[in-house]
Length: 486
Image (cartoon, rainbow, N blue to C red):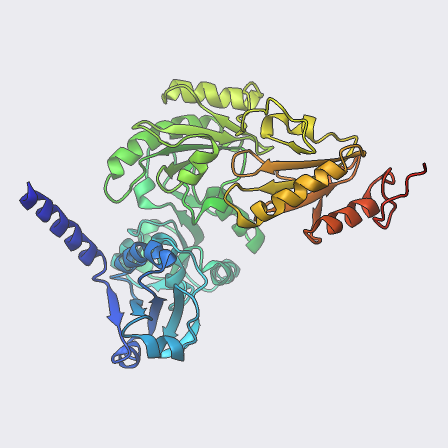
């Protein structure tokens, strides 16, 4: 038994070693000499104990592997700032981990500002080398360019033209997001039967019988080209990744399952082809996508799911960003019915919420998603805190907030708190950290005002006394307690 366990460990170690074989491991002794050897080098400065470094490390190695045969080439390297690379990290002012920098001909050129996952890293770095659009000179080079598992935009131009100018300017603006090529080679023009045109080639692994693999641009100017790419880039049911998440707009139906175009492309397309059949019926009205369940576990949690089985789990958002769940087992028929009900407004929106408290008569009212409108009445002024149970600043604020609630218990002001990690928060409240507080004036709750004042009791009292719609019974506008006549 121990022998097999040892073999397993050795196999895992070999895989890890293989995955990182495309990344140069540099130290103070060889850094300068090595980066001077290559036109473009991406360097990750890291510390072994750094959690963010551990997270990006496999993605970085995978990106290097993806770009192994690229021309022009990009070299990937890493430097351990805690051991052999201390002097190098100091020289290049590395103050946090990981820090990624792009070196050109041995010189520190710029900070890396791109994505932190493999495909995004590769795409960003491809945009950093050579011209924004690759000039294709042979049929073989053209065919090789289209084999990369990413969408491509290709211009075919027999001679200089206004369309070619539009294409090249668009490529310059979008080079970090998309890959471009153009050609004037007679053999290629003859092969494709074009002389002055632009085509969008969808990623080859997404090829299917329901939609064309290529789409021709029929417009003339840059605005039309921008809209054309935006509309057609991902097709009827595109591959939605963390890098492309903003490309997919509501209303949106997403199928989450074991999406993997490297290890299991057939299995991935087995489910996607079924989704495409339904998506075709709603083309131009409702957007569809597929997403890897492991990559989007945080989204699944937002719908109350910790686990997805073998079949896709379908979740959706409508134009108002309300959430919906297809509760029936995945099938084409069930998906058709679900989307039809979504379109007609026949579905009950999913709301992540804690149970409504049995008692809620304290000075600070407890809001959950299910009772929010009752606890935050529009006919009263409200100060609301969005918090997280694990937040240290929230814990420090809690006794002060409780005291504030007791002081104002008999006033026309409601003090409210809500755990924003366990309840859906209305998009009107831009909650990005904890605690976040908002002031809601009476009858104007649609325009919440972020509270950025002090966090002591006196700070809150002065703010509320000044901004209350009606003057408080017990305090004047300056926050001074009124004297009670005997």
